[in-house]
Image (cartoon, rainbow, N blue to C red; front, side, top):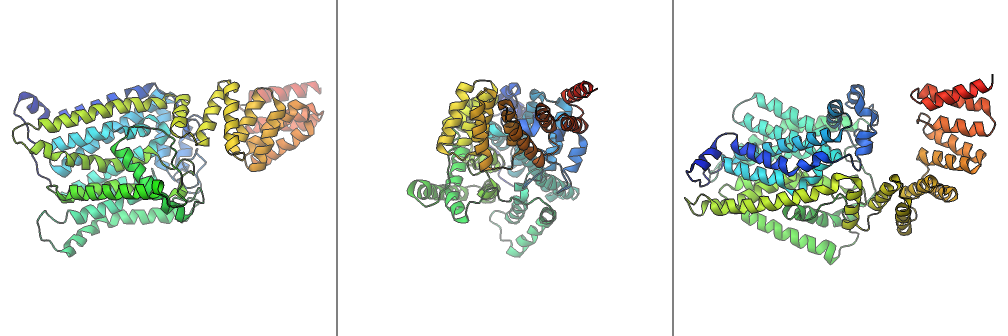
Length: 585
């Protein structure tokens, strides 16, 4: 498909690297080495609800239910709201079965997945170009690209990794089908279906298949008819069929594909797109910084900095890319690489489906980066072919410099994911206006008992946005834990006024009022919590304590009994029930 023959010396060293498997092993080893430090990392950020506190990964029954849309139990965001990702639920369950809550095992699985993805990039580019050297260069660029740190170091970001693995496997199977091995079409379509069940953005894949089939229906310099190219495009029909079936299932259940999380207007989304795409391109080409939190904001009115400049830079990049592709020996491959870069980015531009304060992420670039590393590899091609017989020294020197810089950046960027304190401190440095990361850092201080550091951070958040629900609730909890009950009650009441849906805030207010001696109010708020979450562990126990302190022993016994029946693992509730029953004999 592509001219072979990067100039190679005939030395014994070059002959050794020509052997099958040698370059693959070397590329995978270097990639694994760059991320070896992640094996010492713990569970961070959303890992607590998604993994540590997630009862759904502890039983195959819950995982089986996750395949039934609209019937699945809530599995910490894996299968609720806009998300229908049962393959991710399977991954989580397998990891828990193998490693329990040992984070080293989970991180090893993530690292192994990234190494496998790197190998698949090698196989893909080698097959597309017919050259092992181009495969190795593209693969090592992919494996060491610093933009992938979030995908490898953060366990809860596994959706993009799984989707990308399955889509690359699907495309390689499709290429085998094109070679006349018909059975591979079924494998390719099945892997695509699994990718859709890993993350919704896999929906763009049929367009990649369609464009590849049409592009490669033509040979360079050939004069094939357009009708024959369109006929080749019919091969994408099974993929579109799977996509239509998937959308039909989603539309008939509680799961909406990319449903809105916030109500940002279409005009604001349109004005924000250039800055989002420019952000993505900068991080793909020059990943000098890395964070889970960035300070990019919505663009509500076009201005020079946030709209005109990004549009200008994107147009310059587009023209430069088009010119570069036109100079390639096989323009088709350059066009396809560009499509692989651009199409997977499109779903991320639907900003209504992303949190309003944090709508750009490095992890969204995992699959698109396959296209960028192919383009970069092709751009370096002349360095290897300009002087025949030189062994491509200039090209390999550039590759070595790139890899050295990427390796160092990857090792440096991943350190923020070692623990929450590092992650949130780095987040504040990169996004000082982001209230979520400031609130999260305060939570870490509070969890460590450092209320002198936590409380001022909460107050700084509320100074900027007094109606920020999480900070009001968390500040109330911090005051409760530090024994400042009046302040605790004040901020918990504020949280309830802002949003009264969360049951925990009512129960925490009830506990606060119980310690204040306001038992009637405490009982009322405990009952309001139970109305919203009657099966929550400990809720009936707290109400029983309040009723007992109020002298309503019969009602307290009933609440203790309800708690024990609903949660037999609550040994304290059982012992309290026995105590109060014995005291009445």
